[in-house]
Image (cartoon, rainbow, N blue to C red; front, side, top):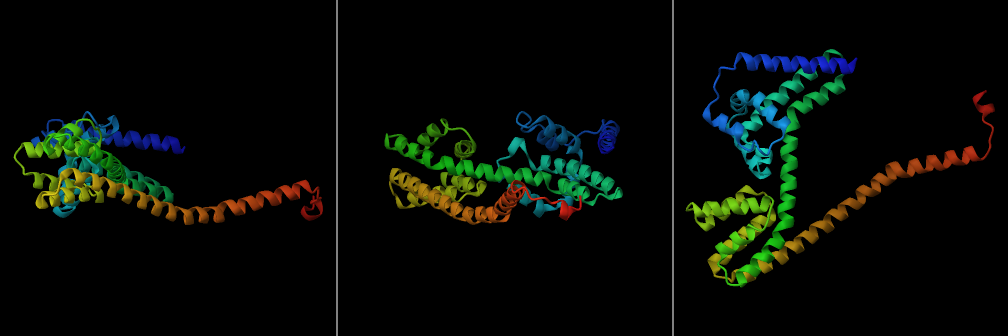
Length: 295
């Protein structure tokens, strides 16, 4: 019965969207929204692409409801996430519209049936599902960049010490790497090619990444440029400091994990083990429980 109800609800939602789409088939999207719909289309999945196309017409209304401050906040978070799957602020608004509608309608259906727990889950899905993806992408991207950066600095120091200029060395080493850090460096190099100063380009690099190690890298480069310090020594020292910081962070995480593991063992494993041992002893003792149970 529940499966049949879910199927009917899904078909009805699909019918509503299809009817709206047919009714507004002659409507033309603004050029910026049409472009946003195609940005990253080769990187996003089929489901996300379908959701984007269903909700893109309602993205301007969602953005107006959010207000300028909230739009700026989420644009910043999308930048920190590295635009996962071609995500833009317009795509984000489209997904909020679709997921909010699905979660709201589904929550109301289960509210009328009196299933409050399922209702809360669906409401939470509609309100937070898009944010969960952005939050996860920010954490993964930050971890990847911080793991890549020390090795990158070592290689960059070797290339610079071989006699290549810093700008050319940065381009050469970045071309050998893949991932978010290489993408960030290519953006920075492209900004410098378009006339932005090196100091400003690296300041933009620091702004796009909420990472302490990236901030250390940019600050060290800017201070070395101001003080005239050898760039090779700066890079080598910075790589050592980053590895030392990583080791300290790993020790802190391990120290925080010990009390959690102890609590889990004390709360769940020890009582379960005692129950298992007690049940085994009672069953193996051959005690007749018929006098207790009356059978």
